[in-house]
Image (tube, rainbow, N blue to C red; front, side):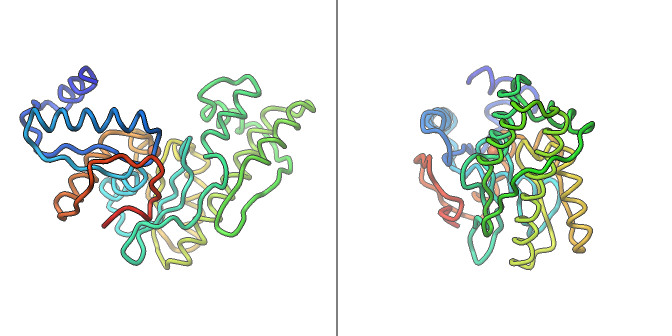
Length: 268
Ligand code: FE2
C-alpha cells in the first residue's frame, strides 16, 4: 500500500504532511479488504496525528457524482460488479429504493462473458458485440422495485449452447437488463419526485446504458448526470470527497468495519 500512497501523492503533487484528514471505506464489502483499509488509515492517523473518518462505499458513489456534476438531489443508479442499487437521499437518510435480488449486473455480464469464452472483463466486449446484434426475446425480470438477473443468465447460456449468435445475445442482454435498470430508476424518481438521475459504478461506463438513461430523463423533463469514467469506477477520490463533506458537517463515524452495512444504516 505504501507504493500506492506514494504514487497518489506524486500525482497530486503534495507531501504526506499536507494531508489534514484521513478517510477510508468501512462498509460494505469483503471483511479482509475492509480491514486492510482500516489498518492503513489508523497507521497514517498515528503517524500524522490527523483525524480519521469512515465512509460507506455506496454513499460515496453518490457523493462524488454530486461533487463533480453539480447535481443537487439526484436518484443514483449505481451499477457495478458486486452492487446494483437505486439510491436516493430521502427523509433524512440514504435509502435503497430498488436493487438486485441476486447478482450485481457487472458480475452477471462477466459471468456470461466467461461462459462464452470472451474472458474478463466482459463488459467492453459485450458492448462492442452488441453493436452488430438483433433482438432475441429474454425474460424481463422486475419485481416491484427490484430486479433479478440469474434467470436471464441461465436463459442466455441456453441460447448460446443452442448456437445463437453472440452478437444477438450481447445486444439482447444489454437492451433487456438496462431497460430493467432504467425502469426501476424512473419509478424511484417518480416516487421521490426527484428531477435528477446520476449514474455510478463501472457498468455505467457502457454507452448504451448512458444513452438509455439520457432518453428516459429527457422524456420526463429531468436531468441526467454522468461523471467521467474514472469516477464511475471505484476510486479513492470518492472516499476522500465523502469523508471531507461528512467531517465538515460534524458527522461522526465509528472506526469499525461493517461488511454487511445497508445504505440506510449510515448514520447522518
Ligand atoms: Fe463501487
